[in-house]
Image 1 (cartoon, helix red, strand yellow):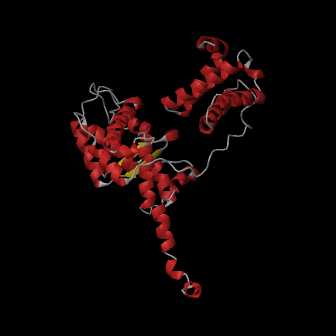
Image 2 (cartoon, rainbow, N blue to C red; image 1 turned 60 degrees about the horizontal axis):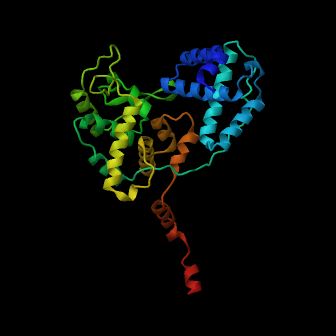
Image 3 (cartoon, rainbow, N blue to C red; image 1 turned 90 degrees about the horizontal axis):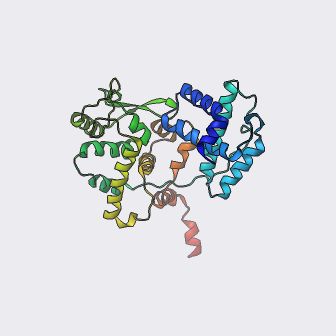
Length: 311
């Protein structure tokens, strides 16, 4: 089905949803992702009238997504988009019920160990940064790997967000701000990147990271910068060739370093800007070396007479 057919049939509802999301202060990327999810669903149920869409229609759609190979995480995101869509229509007094509200999310694998880079691999990654925009690109990678920032957070950074006291004020998910005190080494790189930064032509808001034309770096461009540096790392370290490393995996690396350094889970939650502690708990994975060290801690407590008796 063509996109214009969905717009013709459900244009009012899509407009209401768009207005609702703007009033909620959702970011452009979230706004677009939710709209795309809803449009795919509406294509599936077309030409059913909005008020006649039922819980069963949504369950059939979710089943269809599974049959097409959509994973649990992606299907849960689609369901969240639909819940928000119908919630918006209720709040805008266009519908009276939410058929998606009582549909259970798919169970996802718990305690899955995230992909991350070891400290020596991160050091080599930084050595792979070269070129005309070295300082800018180094600052971007450092913020991902040593401050745990999301790509969208780096994209939204403005020059005023780096304060004189060395703290970085970060606009995270859900339009929530958090304050991160930066180590001196990271502060220095950011300030040098600012000194070298091309003047922006974007009026009041002065983006921290800009292109050669003085425009705010797009999310896609920030991902591309990171991906190109990661590609060079894989050439330098062939053992990483099959490892699925991306800009977001650098955030995993930051979280892993924090846990290994003894940072408690609540503090890490604040640093990462997670709304739920459960999201942060995936980083409490422990490697074999730490497991051995933990077990060695009790080795002296095992009574020696046990070994003496079996000799």
